[in-house]
Image (cartoon, rainbow, N blue to C red; front, top):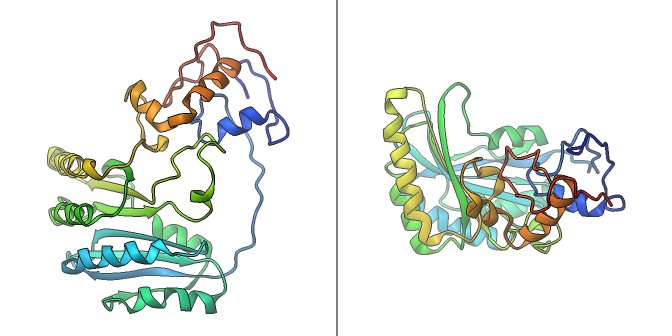
Length: 293
């Protein structure tokens, strides 16, 4: 639904400009009321997590860097630092293979053999089980997040991550690296409004805690960690991690080279900026100049 209350069906054939902008434009052009998906049948996946003592963190992250550099499309692997139930820091790799179980066993064999890990729960599981493993947030607690792209997983970046992860201020907090690879990395930066496809890793620093009196300590840890990682940061920012009050420069960084084209779309579909409580693309057209294709 557009700002004028008009319902449009949008696809690659109908309103293709708006279809392009909705895939990364952060709600700047209307309210999407329904989706049509192309589903793919997925049977049992081979997935789970391997854990290593934190003392091996640098070695594990080096292995992860090399392992994911040649990953097939069927493999997804995220690395991170978390606190185990016994209170000890651990470094882990969460993996899933979407293909035949036999081929998955072959692809995941180096992951399961490296170290070896002190914990390995990789097994056949359903797609929804994999999704639950990825969720690290706890309900009903305070949380604070910093996230961004990395230029690469260099030795200096690994050393900085390990040093700051060692001082993690809450057992509920976590550090995670997620890959941007496979089909997502092969698309051109202008094929959708989401432009940042050249980075291989996305860093998340996630703080969570229960006591309000501890907020300053946990915020300080997160911000100090984030600042230390800036020499290794990639250009741009993922739009879903922006607040609404971070300023136009940050919004432009989220949309990158696609920003001017998105402004033209905004001028067409929302020249009065009705949809503005978002990482906002400001229109330049005067009210009343909307022209729908």
